[in-house]
Image 1: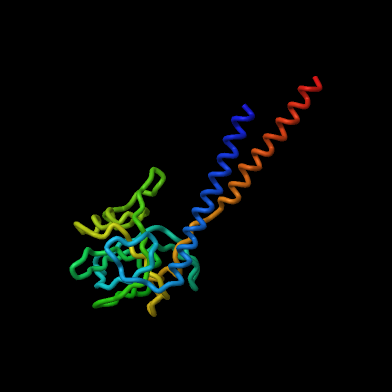
Image 2: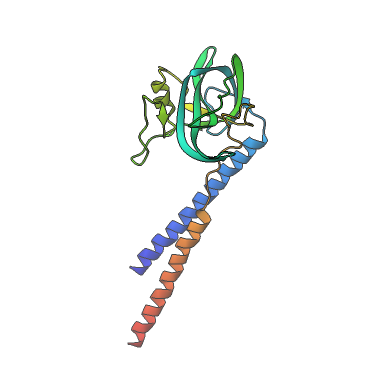
Length: 217
């Protein structure tokens, strides 16, 4: 039994080491993407690639995603990320995550007219799980970033299967406030690996103590 448990614990620790190395590669790719200039959006962009896309915003086709509290000069404010449809010539429309906006607004939202170019990164679509909050389709309030579901709620028959998350400074109007950097997934796998290896060492020590007591008996 001890040998079996030892194999399991060492296996879990080794798996966490592999996960750590995989996560390090992702973080390195994100760092390279941030350091390089954006590329024109292609038909099948890589997840989290930094891109530029040009089109016309549809301020009548917007939705809110998520829930986040931020501290403003007047105090804490609940808000969400503003999703707006970007129409393009001879291409599918794209959902643009333009940035954080307060739920209760006393200032207008920046809505540029005509062609506008966004510098951002490709966010692949998410899928709702059992633990996800329920989307409010009629109210256009979403808690899972699923481009297909959001586009359908906005009346779009077809749209790109990803979201472009805008990067850059906040506009003069103050909102929406775009993302300032690409997302970085947490990399705590070294701690997890040391934990499993620690359990394995503890198991060996306990077995040795038990075996020595058995031999004395």
